Amino acid sequence: IWALPDEVRNRYDLSSLQIVFHMAAPMPPWLKEKWIEWLGPERIYELYGGTEAQGACIISGVEWLAHRGSVGKIAETSRLKIIGEDGKEVATGESGEIYFLPNDGAGSSYHYLGAEPKRRADGWESLGDIGRLDADGYLYLGDRLADMILRGGANIYPAEIEAAVSAHPQVRSCVAVGLPDPEFGQRVHAILELGPDTDAQAVADGMGDFLSDLLSRYKHPESFEVVSVGLRDDSGKVRRTLLRDERAAWMKENRTFRILPARARAKAE
Image (cartoon, rainbow, N blue to C red; front, side, top):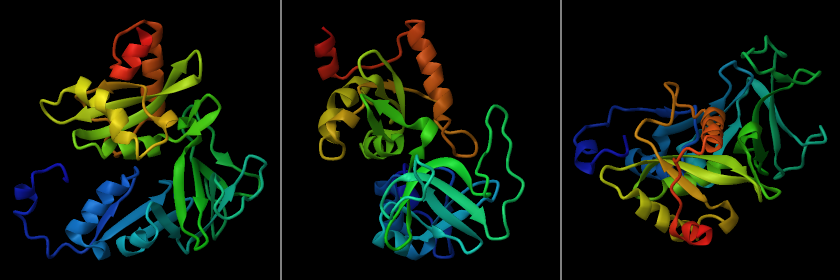
């Protein structure tokens, strides 16, 4: 919707529109700010939780402006805590795996083919996401553990990369994945949807400068790829594992699909 020309968006009277909910996938902060400017913070709400109703967080646009990047506080129907690698609850501000527990106790857990539900013996259940709580109890998401990119021992969250790259005026959408690398274990690869008649190589060459104030250098994508089909499924979700595994297989087949920025090309030569 935001990609529509201003004259198209402004053609319609939205005064009767009361609430807009967004969910299923993170919205980059710059894009959420645009929606808040357009419709007003009192009409924008975000919902984070599991389809299987383990728990949910909600935040209004008004709250979000005071807690930018948050997905809200836990709803009254359930509880939430952040658990570290040692299995213990972490301190405020520290990151760990997000766990939910409904107030009326654990229900029937979900079962997906090829994946076991992550439920602890005490009934607390995880969706596989990483996050942290601030001093006011607002939750901030990192990413799914399975999607995290490990580059030279450093953890990189794809959502952070995607939010920064998507802020580029010629990028419509972005998905970041980690591809195998003999030196660092993994490298960041960005899959892009670009605007019409956009020079993909020019975007790749200029991305380093564009991201210089947005991301630490080691988080910058080291290769790019442009696709013409949508990166999200019908539910609005990104299947990063599928995208990552598909491209790792292409690398084994020596298939050409990556665009290297000028700096990387010079280094390779």
